[in-house]
Amino acid sequence: MAIEVRPATEFDDIRTMVGPKRPDANVCWCLSHRIPSKENNALRGPARGEKVAELLESGPIGVLAYEGDEVVGWAAVAPRSRTCFARSRTIPRVDDLDVWSVWCIRVRPGHRGQGVSHPLLAGAVAFARSQGAPAIEGYPLDNRGEKINPTMAYVGTRALFEEAGFRKVADTSSVLDGFPRVLMRLELS
Image 1 (cartoon, rainbow, N blue to C red):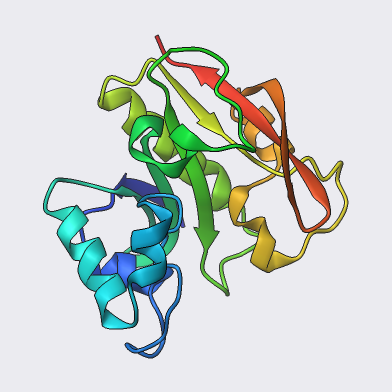
Image 2 (image 1 turned 90 degrees about the vertical axis):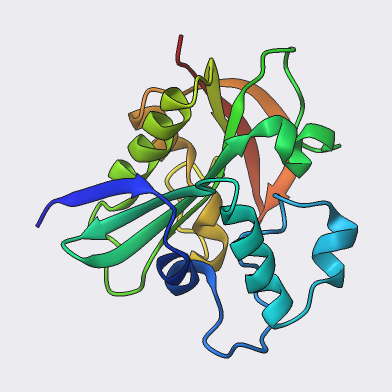
């Protein structure tokens, strides 16, 4: 079946992809790079999901992949200026272009290894383009084809980004799961 990627506007589908199994759990909800660290650390349990619902009031906060009616993937995408990457000490800012960032690519268990991340990243690019982004960046692992821990794979791999037309524009000082992260960019205009 084909994968369709749409702007993330359905709270229940976002919760399925990045929310907890238990409402009181303190899972990421993909907020750790979206909101200031102090606020992120202060939010506990249900308050994390409430923050996502609040953010949704201003519009989509990423994209979701569907196989038929079932949500199977998520990608966080937003203007870099509205993320913690705007102030990052480990992910460099290469110029003053008002780029967008895609920083989390998640595929549901049972659907991994089926190529869902490719249309998901393409959907994040299409969404950024539709919002007027001049370019989009990602900060994937440069794992050189080596196996990575699935819990650390959310940032994507350099190969995934290269296959989507991104090119490496800078090294970073960020390391995840023992692999360096690189700054990849795709010009959109």
